[in-house]
Length: 254
Image (cartoon, rainbow, N blue to C red):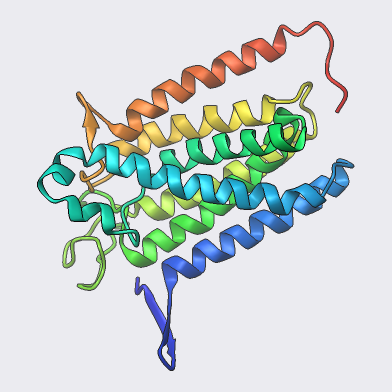
């Protein structure tokens, strides 16, 4: 678990950044490939990915700031730190909103492209969580189990103690979710069902995994972490999306 992988002159390649880049590249390639198979306009994919990426980064940062309001009041300089401090759920919400705005601008069927892009989002998250593991962020609680991982001193995680590798667990679940969504997309009845399934499975998995996270900086809502609170909301929304799609009298043309 070393974030600094190698150095070329003055340039240092960081594991977290590399995994994020690989995730974005993989998400784009898969989205273009699936768009061609579904006879959709592939020219919009690059623009849609850029919009979702910018919206996702902004959303992840804004939600982090919201969870850190009390700390920001004491030290406003926190607002100037753009290198770390992001909340994944903010990225998901911001990315979805940006994607919706682009589809409105380009006059595209939002739910159709939502279904197209969302499996790639899960794929990108899988790579991203490997980056978290290399950097030591999003770490788990202390454990005496055989699966515990000890991080070095230069990582974000506490060093010298075995921790639950929540990053790798999350990464594995994200990759499995990607394949499940791709397979489900082949049998879906109406647009929006793949997106609903993503929100349903991701929020359920994230809610459970949060009990094993050891980083408490992300804030809480009552007895729940901020991510668990948002997971509950998205879980209910996803069920509503599924129920609504099943009640449609005629399936949409796919």
